[in-house]
Length: 367
Image (cartoon, rainbow, N blue to C red; front, side):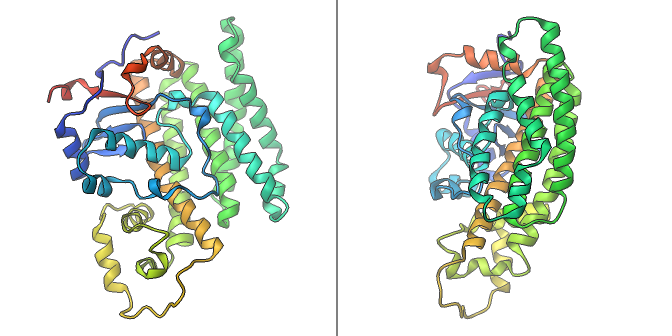
């Protein structure tokens, strides 16, 4: 077991310079990491609670207290350390993922599948695609593979454990390619979401197996490739199915109770791979009609679902980027996720802040 995260110090405070960097946009929060504009990790944020207790946000409304929490709101409330942690934790809750890839583990993936499947079974009677999806042989193989590897901690024989990891990695890799093909097909929002969830789960499971086998660079590269595939599909969905040809409609009264202004800007930046931020709103205002002829202040159920999905996707993109960063860091240490997890588990309760451990880059300590 490792005794510390090399290059980082467990802390209960963050210098004002780091908070100012987040507020200015030169530092960005990607789920479990804070990066500077050069891509270097300034801080690791690790969820200390049980990740298996996280609820999936699969096609379910998200508490609006979380939905708009981002750097713009952080600016309005003030540069506060605990608000920075809240920003990362909100991303975690909305995205249905954890802040640390090592904490996700195989148990989290199993719990996540169970919750997704329960929702899918409720939808199966109304959607033929969902019923067919639930019958896929790949799904059964995935569940079997994860059930096997979640018991790895109880196996002492190294050769047996290694063989189980090899077999599960191969199975997860094959299934992942199947979901990749499905992900890249044009789908409605309700058809896309189970595929997107399973694609993400297989990507994480495959990378975890690789890293546990000591294939550190392979794990990082595979996860990065999966993230890029996921991002292209997600960008297309948000751009075409959610934003559409008239994004200025989001500025009308009809959407005030459903979408925050900064979210609109974030969605458009995500779909178009830009960083215009809040300036987007000025562009949209110039496109808006002078008179809003819509007398209704409600949106239909399908659009409400699409909005929740877009919200989840943008937050999930940040968390997935954090995963790639974390795997790159673990690769530099040449440490397995389980070894990192053992270190997290050894930390005292007093070291937590809002159910989170904070590790600050050594060159920022005392800055």
